[in-house]
Amino acid sequence: MQDNNCSTPSVDDPEHILELRHLTIEDYADVKELMDIVYSQVGGAWPLKNFQSQLNVFPEGQICIEDKGKVVAAAISVIVDYDKFGDKHTYDDITGDAYMSTHDPKGDVLYGVDLFVSPDYRGLRLGRRLYEARKEVCRNLNLKSIVAGGRIPNYMKYAAQMSPYEYVELVKSKDIHDPILTFQLSNGFEVKQLLKAYFPEDKASHGYATLLQWHNIYYDPEEPELLGSQRNSARIGCIQWQMRYFNDIPELLQQVEYFVDALSDYKCDVALFPEFFNAPLMGIKQADTSIDAIWNLATYTDEILTEISRLAVSYNINVIAGSVPVIEDNELFNVSYFCHRDGRVESQYKLHPTPHEKKDWIMQGGNKLQAFDTDFGKVGILICYDVEFPELGRLLADQDIQILFVPFWTDTKNGYLRVRRCSQARAIENECYVAIAGSVGNLPKVDNVDIQYGQTAVFSPSDFSFPHDAIVSETTPNTEMTLIVDLDFDKLKQLKNEGSVRNYLDRRRDLYEVKWKGER
Image 1 (cartoon, rainbow, N blue to C red):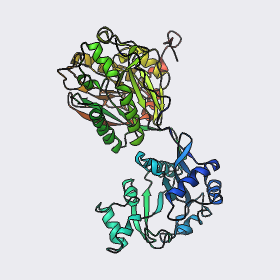
Image 2: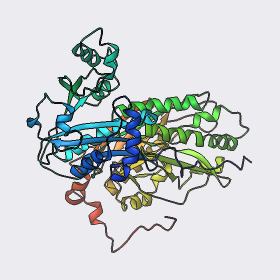
Image 3: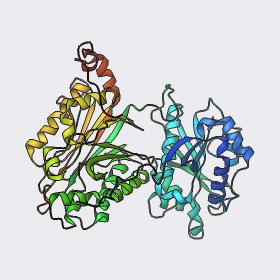
Image 4: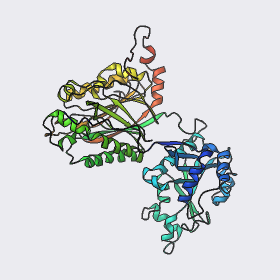
């Protein structure tokens, strides 16, 4: 048979476990260590008394990202009555010498006091996460805008050639790169004006700073939680994957990263890949039988999963890695991995191998079904054939999922239509959204995966609040492309209570039920 040492990829000890949370006084040692590194040229860390004052005055505005218990990035903020200071202010004036004595709970602006990221983590875009968290705080505190003074450290290279005003304009036009200003502009901030002697100790910026502002267009009187409040929408990205030859794993992963990068740029909450998206790698190693080919493919899973999890963290997007073959206890399974953008990795095994998978690949079915708690809502995953068993969708709906993701692989149109029609049925009967993503193209020399037929789509329940045909959006069949869709969860809530028909409320629980008898 095959190498019995091949095992399931380790998900218990990922490289990063990132958590966005509020700072506490116990974090000072980590913060001090971090600031002493980042600000070694401008005085290093604040004393403990400043940090303690910041937490006492406005604990909700002090945010950090920790990795396995250690703070690796942080953002410090204060609420001010901006009219009291106006645009012509210094850092010490508006922050009260970093003690936050200027904090006004009834103020109208969230002022960015500081933001810093460990140099070891700068490739993971943690600064972007902290900016998004600040925006969330601003929105949920009903503040009009975020204002901050930003350093321009690269100006020291150009000070002899141009004025700071000219320098800022060239950074805005992308003719010059400044590590701070370029980053702030890319996160939706605009330059109001240039400040003189804002932070005199900053020799690299020659004491200048840009006054930046981000406008909260959702300003209203509602007051939900500051961080982690329940989302009422999500943006999902589905990849219609072109099967093509790859010479090795890095070449395949390069194509994976292309799609992850693209969907991240569109601020998608999740990227969905198809079932067996890595099947082209079956062609890079000679195999005598189809069993040998699929078992060889399973040996690549650990490397692929590790890299996709890294991409999820780096690009700040959850990734459903379609499905991949896994060898466990000398048996073959088909597994979908949910790679969270905080570093966690969870899995859903295919419960029903198709007759082909059982006969030609000796594939086994899993025995667990779970809903996944994500940072944008509760979701479920059913791999291809599994969606054709309505009990599974019902069991997930009873766990309050809002989106059902279905990575699939089908070779013919009639096979595809089985997946499509059943997915549409799951959306209607369980009052949730269903997203399906498949592969297209041909692999003539790869046994059992030589042809594909697919059309990626997102389906909704069928009622007045949704598209007339209950299709939110769909791709062109058999063409590599992405599908990006915004989903409104409030419509699902309204449907359950006020829909033309109410499948959830009207179910005759006194007569029948669906029960799970397997592992939990």
